[in-house]
Image (cartoon, rainbow, N blue to C red; front, side):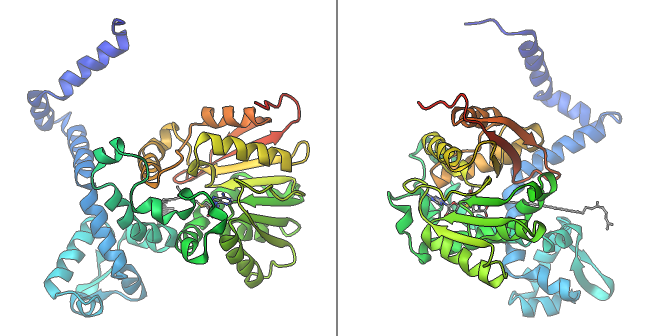
Length: 380
Ligand SMILES: CC(C)=CCC/C(C)=C/CC/C(C)=C/C=C/C(C)=C/C=C/C=C(C)/C=C/C=C(C)/C=C/C=C(C)/C=C/CC(C)(C)O
Ligand SMILES: C[S@@+](CC[C@H](N)C(=O)[O-])C[C@H]1O[C@@H](n2cnc3c(N)ncnc32)[C@H](O)[C@@H]1O
């Protein structure tokens, strides 16, 4: 076995100090160390108790508490009637929500939004995710079984109907409606980040592959009036996008085409293709084939834009390497990939000038762009 490096030995020494109960006690009472010790202990408590906090949040969201008190601050009696909870339970939930900064006491015994509650009210996509997490947490109830077991035996795998079954193109509206609505609700936070770092103004026609109900294309089209848009998704999803384009007055310049990128060719004619929260759903062989299909659908010097969580970035490691890694494991296929991994898949498909764009709020997506070159295509 190799001998330990100097860094390994230093870290081993640090671990033995930090895990020593006598050192912990000393740091907790020594005035110069006390603030750091308290912060670390609080961070550890948050990790230990995070599920309880999430469930308090879920109760608030399921009871529509934030909407009720955003309308007008209310007393515990009013809220217990409107939420159909015994008064004592209502008070308990309000106290917990105050502690989590979701709710804040107001004048005359009323309750209004806390800082986090107000910010949540501005993020409907996050509220939708909080409700969706009930399913994720059931799949994560036994995390070791999730790690040991075959991938995707739980509820999420059934929910994301396209990850199972050989013929996703045959899925009906009843299989895609729920996930498509969830993606539409959380799409504004993605589109905002993409549009902050990338302008579609230099392009003529955008093809959004796996484009869901057209929420992303609608946001891009609103900012880029000359752009023509094509959406490609499973037929039952593309039908929803066609409806949205009609409702948004985009039917003239946005077309929705149904098919499966696993078996059907991609529509041609676009000079830029986007893959927004698509690649990380699939394993490497499917992604490699999809990237080759995108490459052949693009003209020379055409652009590919990818937006999804990227693993291995220190600012967002807990989200991509923690949350999304376990989410996708429960879902049964795909993974959040590092930039280096994506770059090698892109290069193998014939893309060059591969850039990572750091978005302002990289919680659920970072952006990568790449350019098609015909040289050096690896046809293996
Ligand atoms: C003037 C005053 C009063 C104050 C000034 C102080 C100040 C600057 C305050 C800041 C206020 C502010 C702007 C707050 C903003 C907060 C924001 C934007 C918070 C955003 C939070 C977003 C969260 C928590 C997002 C969660 C997203 C989740 C959980 C997404 C999950 C996505 C999934 C599961 C996708 C699945 C797709 C699949 C299947 C993997 O492909
Ligand atoms: C996680 S969702 C992302 C939707 C949208 N891009 C967004 O960010 O809101 C993945 C999308 O890829 C689509 N999809 C999955 N497999 C597909 C396939 N084989 N062919 C075409 N679309 C597919 C799904 O129907 C779904 O709309």
